[in-house]
Every structure is written in structure tokens, then in C-alpha cells.
Image (cartoon, rainbow, N blue to C red; front, top):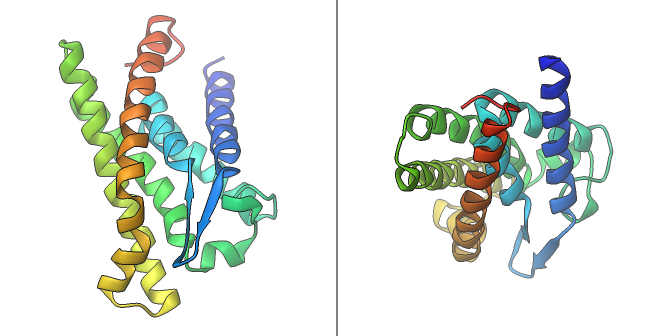
Length: 188
């Protein structure tokens, strides 16, 4: 039964990532759009942990790679993964692992709810930095940009909105995580 439960949870968060990628606002000065995917990525690992959170983002990536239009703006295929924004998608998997790992280390051991919430929040901020790192590196390589140009086009326009998404995501993830632990659907 554990394997079925894990399969359902991984599939659920992969589907949530697919759904949140539909919201895509292109910006005229960068190939990187504004999306809601960050919410799904950060919540998947905060709720499911490093292994299942990673798997959920790997499933999402594979769905897009094989041609399902699940990437930002309904795009699909290896061309997206190899294009200027592909690093962000690869960063989703790495970020999910890092967030889940940090939460296992810090949040799971907290007895104080406020400290646990802060551990989740800071884990998500660390995960955001992972996504930015992967994204900017590939953006620079593919678009032949300098580091400053990569940061200006791939990070700066998104920081405020991403911090808001993380604040919202950490609150939701904290509550969902508590409920799922209480109902024994996930382990702490």
C-alpha cells in the first residue's frame, strides 16, 4: 500500500506542477516568463520530502520532454529543456531534493511550530536559489549572456513575486504537511 500511496502523491504533485505552469506571463525583455510553478515545486518537496518531491518534478520534466504541453505557456519537448529556460526546469528537480533534505534536517526535528514553519520557509528560499542558479547558468550559456545580463534577465524581475510565492507556499505546505502527518499519509 505504501508504494501506491507514494505513486499517487508523486503523480498529484506532478499534476499540480503541470496545472500551475499554464499560468505564464511572458516578459518582453527576457525569455523567462512569470509562472506559478515555483509554488508546486517548493510545496512538493516540503510536503513529500526529498525523494518523492524530486520524483514529482522528474515526472513533470519527463512529461514535458516526451511532448505533453506542460512546460510554461503550454510548451513541450527537448527543445525547451535545451533552450534558454531549460535550466529552471532542471533546477526544479534539484531544488525539490534540496528543500526536502533541508526540511528533513531542520523542520522535522522542531517541537516549536514557529521554528518548524521558519525552517520550511528558509528551506524554500534555499531551493529558490538552486532554481535561480541552474536557470541563470543555462540562460547565460544558451543566450550567450554575461553573468550580469543573466541575473538581470533571469532573476531580478522575479525576486519579489517569488518571495511572495514562497511565503504563500510555506504557509500552505506547513498546514498540508501537518495534516498529512497526522493522518499518517506521510512520515514526519
